[in-house]
Each structure stands twice: as C-alpha cells, then as structure tokens.
Length: 535
Image (cartoon, rainbow, N blue to C red; front, side):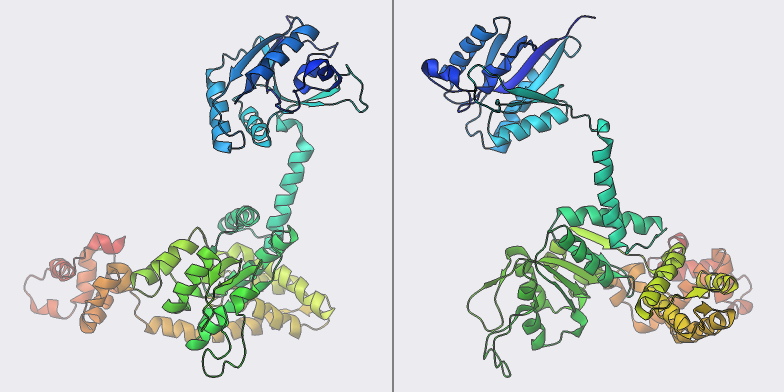
C-alpha cells in the first residue's frame, strides 16, 4: 500500500520560532523541531503567517531545508491585521481552507496548534473539528531537559469523538443528572413536560438571560425556579441568593420599595435605608412570580434594571447596581395583557427570550403516579414513617385521579394536599380503601363550587372568539345572547339542527320555517359563520 504524504499546516511562531545567529540552534523551535524527528518524515510544510514576519519565515524555511532536505516548505501570507481578533482570524483561515487543494486520498494532514495566538489555535481547532481542515490536530512539546538538537515530542489528536465513548458518556450522564435534579428525581412520563425540562437544563447552564415560566397556578413554576437556582449554584454559575416574591402581594408605594429599595426619608415611614429585593439578589437569581400583577411604573423600573443592571432606589439620586438573573412566572397570557395595555411591550420582549409553558396536572395524567410515589417518600422522610397504599386502594385512587371526575383545579398543590391527608390518616403506614373513598369524596366537595361556578359562567369566551377590542364593542345584552347561541351551535350536529333547537317555539308559527337561514343571518350580524364556530 502506498504511503500517504504527510503535510503539516501551521503558523510560524513569531516568538517560539525566532532567534538570531547560530544561537538559535540551541533553542527549541516548534516548526523546525517537528522536521528533526528521525522516525517521522514531513513531506510538506504549509507555513502560514501574517504581519511583517516574511524575514522570519525565510529563516525558518532555510533551517528546515538544512535539517530535513526532503521537506518542501510553502509559505502563505494571510490578511490578518490583528491575530487576536476572532472574526479576522476565522475569516482568513476559512478563505485559505476553501482555496487549498486538499487531497485526502493521497495526503495526510496535521494541523499544528502549538504556535500562533490563542485565538489562532482556537480557530484551527474549530475548523479541523468542522472538517474544513480534513486532518488531525498536532501538538508539539519541548524536551523535558534542555538539550540542543533534541526535537522534543509531538502528539496527534483525533477529533473523532465517537472513539471517546467514556468522555461522551460522562457529559451525557452529567446532563441526565441535571435533568433529574430539576425534576427532583421524579420519573415523569409526559413527553411534552420532559422535552421542556431537557431544554431548560441546557439553557440554565449556558445562559444568564431572563426566563419566563408560564402555566396555571400550582403547575410548579415556583418549585422549578428554585431547582434552577440550585442547579446553577451546584455548577458554580451563581454566587448569590435565591430571592422570591409574588408580585400579587405588592401594592401601592410599597411595591417599588420592596423591589428597588428606598433611602431614608423617601416617604412617610421610611425611617432607614432599605436595599430592596433586586439588590438582595445580586449575583444570584430573582424569581418574580405572577409578574403580570406588577404595576406599569414598576415594570418600567424593572426593565431598566434587567437591561442595565442599574436602577434608582425610591427617593434616591444615585443609581445602584445589581447583577442578577431574572426568572419570571405568570398564569396570565402576557401577550394578551400587552394588547390590553396592562403589561409593557418592551418588558415582555425582554423577558420573552426563553419562555416555557408548564402544563397543568390535567394535561399530565401519566405523571400522577410517579408524583404520588415522590410525595409519599417525602412524607416518610419528614415524619420518619414509610407510608404505602394497599394494592386495591392504590388502584382505586388512580382510577379516580385519572378520570373526568378529578378536576385538579389546583394542579400539583391539590395532589400534594390529597396525598398528605391520606398519609396522615394511614394507620401503621397503610392507606386503605376506606381512606381513599373518604378522600375522593372530600376532593369532589372541594371542587364542586368551582365546577358550579364554571357552569354558571359564560361558556363562550368572546374575547378569544373576536379579539379583546371587538368583544368590548358588543353590548352586554347582545353578548349574553350571542354566548348562548354559540354554545348551542357548538353542541349541535349541523346548522339546521342548531336552528331547530334555537327556534323551537317561533318556528311553529311559520308555514315554511327555515331555521338554518335564520341562524345563518343572525351569525352574519357578528361576522360569524357555522364553519368558523366548528373550528
């Protein structure tokens, strides 16, 4: 088999490869030393350089010819004004690689990363990994003991990471540990939730940008925010505290003081300076739950604090600094709140970079069972007693929990409270059929007022149907009538069927009743159609 030619591509070292007179031969020079290895033949050396180093390149070329006459040296001047400028270096190397006549079938390429600035070395690494340079990385080292003529050693680095399964497995294992940590070790089965947590884990360790957690009350936003902080702290990405506040508890002048602090005498009762929660979260994480409840003035101040890391305390003349990561939570549709003028569009745009909508428990029925197991373990650890279901009792509770009768209005808070009650009533650590029966009845009673009020409320959301502006222009009388009509239409098989139900009395007085036409004309008054209502 024919031996492939060995071709080295690397920069001349303005310091390492330098030297004047015969003294230079007493110095280890990486580019020259590489050609001095008796058991290695370098067929060609593509010597790259930038700036005013043509004279040095000429010296290195002559010296390589002296020690290795069989090595052909080809020099290439690259247009790089600043070898520490990443964009310039990468662009110049990219142009060189695109124009170079690589011949991998007949030549083997070694990319020398010992010489050149750190930026040059990084770009060579990236381009070799991306196969713009179809070869292996070459790292040279000086001899351990100084000895003139000793070429030192060299190492070839193969970037085919498939050969390094242990390394890959280690990184994968660390990522899986992070995901499990965010889920508190709960083996969740819901595909949508698992996908969200996997992405959140990747974002959490790479980004300090604001994060927005959306979802109904009790979906676990506050719990997840704290776990995110703990994960980042374990990875040494934050030094400060986890600071949490529910914005729904902030009212009036006290809202600004609580968040941004105040100086002494700023208002009546301000007897001393107060740092505020934003400064308390310096180098840590600030979780603003229910951020949609924050007033517009506080929203404006928060936007400046997030963007500039600086803000004015209430009554202050000098800005203070706080470098925190913001995690916001809300059960509102902030996009709709922006349209209604209740939430600042610029703040929403700033915190909407990483947005995740956590599904409620009713959308994660497959996760009820693993969460029950987690809650029972937590109860046992806290009370020093292991609690378990009887098999029949567990099956009975699971049937109820996953049925239509289970509303789970409070989401995981409802589930946590339910498990806590049953575990507390368990005799000798066993949850029986009787306990489950009593608990299901209790839950139905707790949910009944919510169910009744839901039935009493209008079943049709006109804002969702028309948009908030158009819905606001409909008279209340027409709105009530229209909601009832739409409900009947959605519960009917056809336009005629809905018309018969709606005009069941008046149609008797007509010789040729055309219920469908009457209904169609009524809907047209509001620019509605039968097909649109079905969609």
